Amino acid sequence: MLRVLTIARAFGVICVTLMPSSLLSAALPQTVGLVEEFESTTAFWEQFEVAKEIVALHDKSVLPRLELWLRCEDMRRRGNAAFVFARLGDDRGLEVIQAILEDRSPKRAVFEIDSAGHPSPALQIRADRYYAAHLLGDLKDVRAVPILIPLLKDEDVKEVVPWSLAEIGDKSAIPPLKETLADKDQTMRASALRALEKLEQETSN
Picture (cartoon, rainbow, N blue to C red):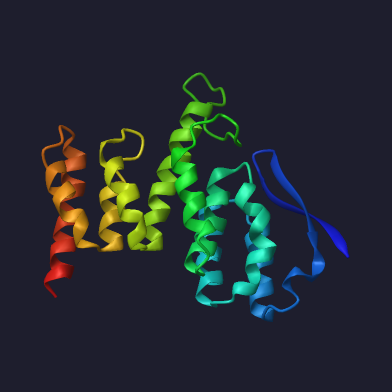
């Protein structure tokens, strides 16, 4: 049996998908409730907290239900779904987050507003890419390190990259972070220094 599920209503944007109601038939009752909360939560940052709760249950039966979220036009909600996939061992998750970082197309839900009060695809692209770089740190997957290192010079996302590298905790990030200490941006230098302190402390233990 198919049912229409309305999800992710925010600022007038709705993601609507057609879902088989049986997709969660094998899931734990707690999982079912969390997936429904994930689908109905309107703020992407609150949705991410639900995503972490889903991951903590280690129940891969949620993935078929969430597949269409990997194509949602709201890139941050797409990223939240990808986080679940990646943490549950499905490579599509990391691939989707990397794709968001690489995607500069205006084809997306736009919530960011420019100084004139108009929706700004350019600002939205920047916000979406920044969020994706942050998600790579949340994942703590060493495979994200070579994705993140070139972004230390990317003006859109570079400020969050040292944090993400430190969260992953792989020592291969230490040399490029040391190079970042020469960045002309004081905030960037400070971020790199904090990341280095954390990495060097962890690798010495």
